[in-house]
Amino acid sequence: MPENAKKSAKEPPVYSLIRLSRCYNCDARLEPGSIVKFEPGKDEREVRCRNCAKLTELEFLKSGNAKITQLAKKYSERVIVVMQWSELWKTYERVGLLVESVAIDRIEKELKIQFENRESQEQASGQKLKNKG
Ligand SMILES: [Zn+2]
Image (cartoon, rainbow, N blue to C red; front, side, top):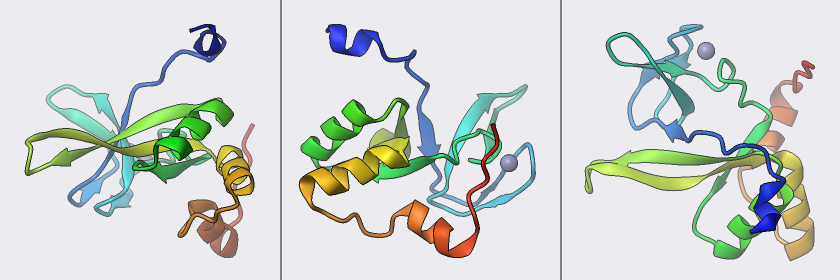
């Protein structure tokens, strides 16, 4: 499919925690549900928080709606799969995607919907988004 050819290389998946953890890099406390990246370490995988993994510009989009997922992939330059361990199935399951906020904005406009509990809105009321370039 030539449509995908122009996209940048596929990024490795990130993970949604099911238990409390700490960032290996900055020691931030990570609540269950936090999205983290695993880096291969010496003995085990090291956990990186979203700040350290440079994922703060991306927003979590829950999977479940094929049309929304399709649009997110179309509009977002970066698409990262979010996996979560399932105790029931003893395997990692896909729970959603990390995509650019602008892509979610476009989907909301195009489908005339409003996602609940958007991360960017929570951030806007709390702290200002840091713009490091
Ligand atoms: Zn960190």
